[in-house]
Amino acid sequence: MKIYTKKGDTGETDLLRRRVKKNDLHIEVNGQLDEIMATILLTKQYIFEDDTIKALDKIHHILYQMAYEIALDDPNQIKVFEDDVIWLEKQIDLLDEKLEPLTKFIQLDETKSSAWLNMCRVKTRTAERFMIDLDDVKKVNLFTLKFLNRLSDYFFTIGRKYNES
Image (cartoon, rainbow, N blue to C red; front, side, top):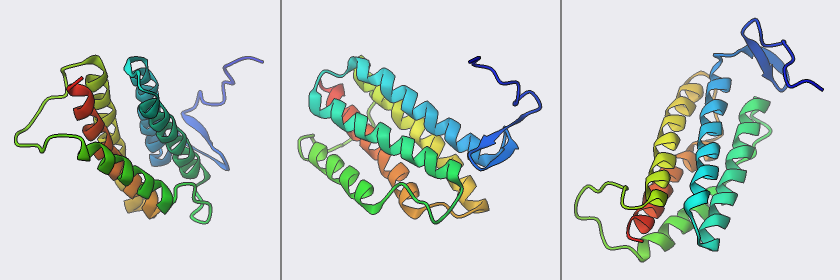
């Protein structure tokens, strides 16, 4: 089987149940989610704590489900749930308890892991902006929006932890 199909040569692609232009917001959002997932996989190469790797793997899985939800384009088939948001909030709270309070702006650049976690944060913020654009056109699952919003906070908080390593 060849990797290329030639079906996209005219600027269209598949959104699971229908053909859309490659610049459709659903495709843009999923491309942004894909960038976060790829950045997470790269970041894992600089993380050596099992708990963090497991958390990043779970986040990757939720983002994959989120992309599937966007591709389904069906408000009755949500794949990101309140439990996912609550889990992420607990992860942030656990990390935050062990960190010194912030008193100034900081750069996440003391280690390769903190720099890559910061890149995950930046990619998440970009994806969130495109997700909001999509939500303006067609309502998106509220838990998907909440998860992305919390996710940038998670990457910042865990980046702070690895900045001190």
